[in-house]
Amino acid sequence: MPYYRQVGEIPRKRHVQFRDGGGTLRAEELMSSNGFSEESALLYHARPPTAITAAETVETEEERVHPNQPVLPRHFRLHELKSGGDPVTGRHLFLHNSDLRLSYVVAGETSPLYRDAVGDQLYYLESGRASLESVFGRLEAGAGDYVVVPTHTTHRWVVDEPEPVRMLVVEASGHVQVPQRYLSTRGQLKEGAPYSERDIRAPAEPLLVESEEEADVLVRPRAGFTRYRYAHHPFDVVGWDGCLYPWAFSIHDFEPIVGRLHQPPPVHQTFAGPNFVVCSFVPRLFDFDPEAVPVPYAHANVDSDEVIFYCGGDFMSRAGAGIGQGSASLHPSGFVHGPQPGSVERALGKPGTKELAVMVDTFRPLDLAQAALDVEDEDYAWTWARLG
Picture (cartoon, rainbow, N blue to C red):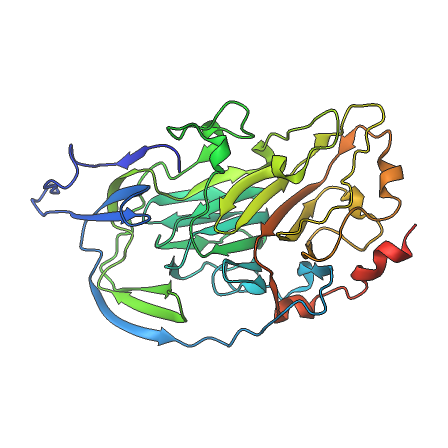
């Protein structure tokens, strides 16, 4: 994150003695990124965060993935995937490459304590409410929220509302960041960026779980899963400070950039990850030149695969193709993609669009997981030829 926060009780200087009221020395933990050279946070635990009493390999089902062959545009109806479980173990992987994993989950239960040791996680909440509880504190999230959870953060999702929570999950192989072009040389979001620090939420106070019992934490390393048993609950942080922590941002606070003529997709960029970007399509005015064509032109992005998750609004440029809320489309490199036939004419003279969608562009090809094939609309690739 581009700016500093301080939560709870911390000592006057880093790496000095810090004791509780009874004289017990608190345990300092440094969470740092890129080998101590970039953002970090210092957390102060009541007890050592290193005290494990057991460890075991967690067996999981083998994930079957298939190359996108033949190379086709594809449409997945994610709302048809099985619901239930929790936001961690209930995920349905549907697209995958070496840089990221894209999953969808409809969860009605609280997750186990979890830590991803591979990369940051980016959640988008399509509907419902949940609380992210972590060593940094509690962060409430609802429909339209993005939530970024840094690598190695011990956390759990608490789902205790009657309505289940629907989430799109991006598991990165590295860090999810604010695009560099939005930041000043010292890390402040610039004037002209589509959101600002005022739009960002983070934990505001410590979350202390009073428990003397052991606690299990599910960890995802580079291969498989491990379950650690800790001598005590990890939520014993009395304070922390730094620039590395979970944070939330609502898609409804993204300020669209519009122009006299149609603007290219990079104006919608919201996050940057290793070999991928995430963009937000929100309700916005159309281009204001009287002869402007307000829907996207056909284009061949020769360096990336494009995934769009449709989460609200009218999806005008996809009208008639079977796309609806909960759909995800994949337009791969090698396929020239653009609006469905007839959508340009339908858009002329309209003041704007009400679409709400999340786009993930990857710079390596995406493979198809079995969940994607299970809910694929196999007619989608031919709709450009059949509609008029």
